[in-house]
Structure formats: C-alpha cells, structure tokens
Image 1 (cartoon, rainbow, N blue to C red):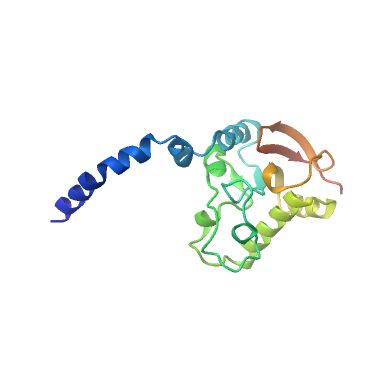
Image 2: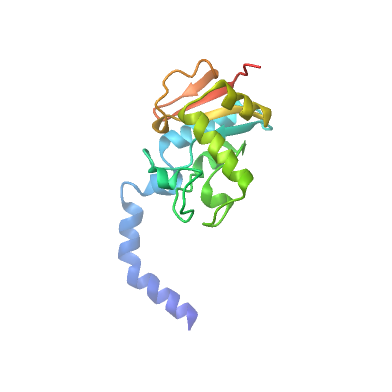
Length: 175
C-alpha cells in the first residue's frame, strides 16, 4: 500500500516536479551559486588540507536579515544553512552553516562565540579580533563582501583570490 501511495503522489505531482527542475534558478538552488562554487574550489586549491578557515558566510542569501544571521538572535529556528562553501572547499571551518551543526536550537556557548567572532571580524575587523582568530588556529578567512562595509583588508591579510561576492584572505597577525 505504501508503495502505491508514494507512486501515486509522484504521478500526481510529476508536472510540478518537472517545472521545478527545469526552472532557471533550480541549478543554483541545488548546487549553490557560481560565486560560492568558485571560491570553494579556490579555497581547496590555495589552502593546505589541515588549515582552519573562518568566514562570515552564514547565510546563502545576499544581504541577510540580522535576525537570521546574528549570533545573538532570539529565534534559532530561522537562518540560512550556508553549507555550499564548506562542501566545495573540502576544508575544516572554524564554524559553519547553522543547520549543519545543530537542528534549530541555540547552539553551545562555544559555537555562539565562534559565530560572533567570525561575524564581528567580517563586519568591522580589528587587530584584537584578528589575533583572537589566529590564537584559535585560524589562518584563512573567506569574506562574504555582501555582509561588510569594509573595502580594504590589507591590514589583516593577504588577498589570495576574489570574485564578485568573496575574498579569500591569508591572515597576518599583528602580534
């Protein structure tokens, strides 16, 4: 009976599925947009396999609302599961993708602190924030340019590659 039910549902929704799969945005929805894929591949090629990489990319949308992005938000059931960067780069991240790490509940204090440090550094970098990242073993930072007003990152790292949305920085310390 279950098999028949599943098959009848597929037959009933087949036209909708075909329309969804053939839509213009389906590829980016399933595989991530080209900027994410491009920077992910660059991270894979330009960083050592044992590197720890931080990023302020926690939302797959551009211009993410604070209530789905902030480490201090009240509703953890909301937020972008920004996983494509991790998937395409095959690297270890300081913290990544809300939905990947926990299931719609507030994460541990350590995870919240890592999110906060990553978001704060991406938004308004300081030497203290840079040193805090480096102290925890982070040596690269993938900057989501849509989430920062800062244009010049030369005081914090060497730009290895960039595209329209991202910059890959090799961090330099001020210690």
